[in-house]
Amino acid sequence: MSVIRELLLGSALAALATTVGAATLIPRTSRGRGPISLFLVVAGGSAGPLLSGDPSGWLAGALVIAALPTLAILAGRQSAWHPWARVTGAALVQTAALYLGYATLLTIATARGAPGAILGTLLLVVQLASLGLTLSFAYEILDVLGRRSHPARDAVAATQEPDHWPAICIQVPAYNEPPEMLAITIEQLMLQDYPGRWAVQVVDNNTPDEATWRPIETLCRRLGGRVQFMHLADWPGFKAGALNEATRRLPDWVEVISVVDADYLVDPGFLRATARHFADPSVAFVQTAQHYREWEADGYLAGLFYSYKYFFDISMVSRHEHNAIIFGGTMGLIRRSALEQIGGWGEWCITEDAEASLRLLGGGYRGVYDQGSYGAGLMPLSFEGLKQQRFRWAFGGVQVLRKHMLGLLGLA
Image (cartoon, rainbow, N blue to C red; front, side, top):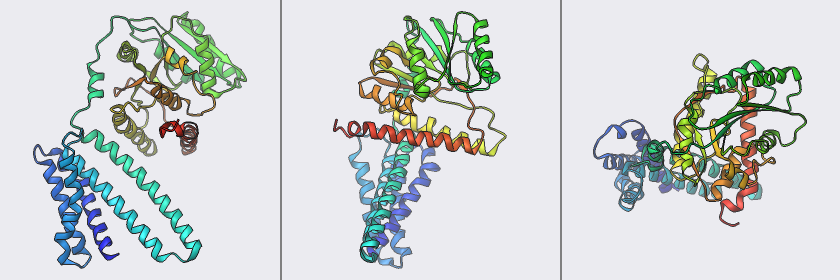
C-alpha cells in the first residue's frame, strides 16, 4: 500500500504540474513543449517518494510515473494532438487509474463485513463516475487547445456562398411569453438580409391567457404575408408537438427550418452566414454559438454566462471535429426533408432538440457548428429558473439514454 500511495502522490503532482503548465507556460512556448511537459511529469513523479519520506525512491518514482506519458509521445506521432497535450492527458488518466486502484485496495482492507463492503463498493462506483466526468471535460479541453489542426472548424470558415440559397422559414415557438419581449424578437427578425426566399412562423403553444397572445397575432398580421402566426390551444407534446404541427402547416417551398427562441435578438446576417452549409446534401443541421445579453452587471448572471460559454467554446468545438454536435434548440437551422425523414421532433422527450440530433447523426447525416454568434438571448433570471432548466436537461438526457443506449453501444 505504501508503494501505491507514493506512486499516487507522484502521479497526482505530475498531473497537477502538467495541467498548470498547459494552462500557463506551455502554450506560450514556441518549441520544446512536449519535452517541457514530460519534464514536469518527471519532477512530479520524483517528488512523490520524497514527500512520502522515501528519498531513495525518487528515481524509481520518476521512471514509473513518466512511463505512460513517454509512451503517449512516442506512440502518438500520428495523433491529432500536440505532444504536450498527449502527455497531459496521459498524466491525468494515469492518476485516475492509480487512485481507483488505491481506493479499491483500501476498501477491501478496511471493509467491515457485508455492509461495509456494499457501502464501499457504492462509493467506488460514485467515484468512478466522477472521475469519468472529469476526464471527459479534460479530453474536450485538450482536444481544442492541444489540436494540431481543426479541419471541421476550418471547413466552416472556408464555405463559400452557394449558387442556390435554400428557402427558409424561421420558427419562433412561444409559451406564455411577455408580448412586449416577443414583439421585439419578431420585429428584429424582419431585418434579415438574406438573398433567398424566407419567412417567419410564430407558434404560440398553449398560452392560457388570450390577452397575452392576441397582441402578437395582431402584430404578425400587420407585418404582412412574410409572417405567419398560429395559436395552438390544448396541444399535446409540449414544444416538440407544437413545432411538429407548425412544420406540417408550412408551404412546400420551405427547404430549411430555423428555430429561434422568443427572447433572442437576431442579427440581420444570421441566415446568410449559416444557410450556405446546406449546399452539402450530407448536412442535416447547422448550430451556432448561443450568446446572451444583460448579464455584465450581475454576478450570478456572469457566472452563468461563462458556464454556457464553456459549452459553446470548448465542448461544441471538440464535438464538431468528431461529427458529434447537438442541435441546441435555438439559433440553429435544420433541413426539413431530414427532419421529416426521422419522423419529426420526438414528442416523448423534453430535450427534443438533442434527441433529434442523435437520430440524424445516426442516420448518416452531418451537423455543422458555426462558432460565430449571430444574436443574443436572455438567461434564467433566477436560481429557481436555472434549477428548472438544468432539471429539464438532466431528465431529458436520461430519457435519451434509455431510448438509445443500445444504439450508442453499437448493440442495436
